[in-house]
Length: 267
Image (cartoon, rainbow, N blue to C red; front, side, top):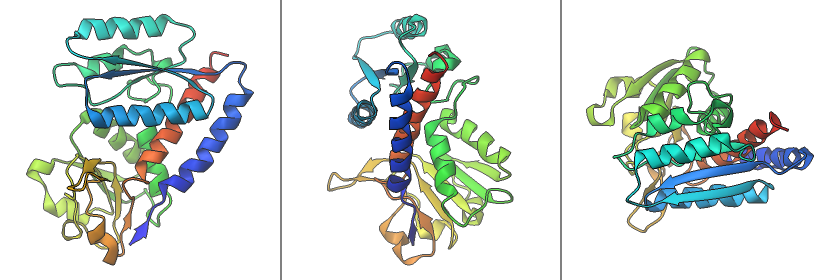
C-alpha cells in the first residue's frame, strides 16, 4: 500500500494562507451555521474554527438547537448575506433530515459560499479540490481513467462528478445499498463518502486502485476511521488516503484558502 499523505500537502497550503491573510487590509470573517447536536459535526466545526483562527481569520459559530424552523435559518443566512463584514458563509452538513439543505445552500450569496456548493459559487468546493489534489499525488491521470463515486449525498456527488468529467475521467455514481460490483472492480479511482466503517475492501477493488476515503466513522475503540478497510489494504499495491490524515486536512486548508479568496474580492 502507498499512503497519500494529506497532512503534508495541507501544511504547505496553510502556510500560503497565513501569508495571504497578513497581506489583506483587514482580517477575513467566516460565519458558520451548525444545526443540532451531532458530535461529529461539532468536532469538524471546532477543527475548522481552530485552524481559521490560527491563520488570522475571524470565525463566528452560530449553533441552533431544536426547535428551530427552516424560515429562521433562512433569515439568518439573509442577515449574513447583507452584512458587509461577513466575507464567507459555511453551513455544516449534514443537517437534520427535517431541513432543506439544498434550499439553504442556494440562499447563500455565490460570492460568500465558501464551500462551493452553490450552483453559481465563485470558488471550488474544498473537499472536491482536495480530492483532485490527492489523486494528483498518485500515478493515476484523470484523462481516460475510470472513477467510482460512492456517496449518500447528491450535493457532494454531482459537482464532484462534473469536475472529474471535465478532467477527462469516466465517472460512475454507485449506490452502496445496490452496489454494482463490476463497475467498482473496474475503477482506477474509488472515492467513498458513505459513513460506513470498513465498507470498501480489497476484494471489491482492483489492485493498484486509488482509494480516496472521505468517510468518517467510529470503530469499537472509539477511534475515527474511514469507509475503507485501511488495514486490509496494507498488503496491496493500492494508493489509500488515511483517516484521519488524508482528505480532512486538505479540506480544512482549502476552506481557509477559499475564505481568503472571497475576502480579497471585497477589500
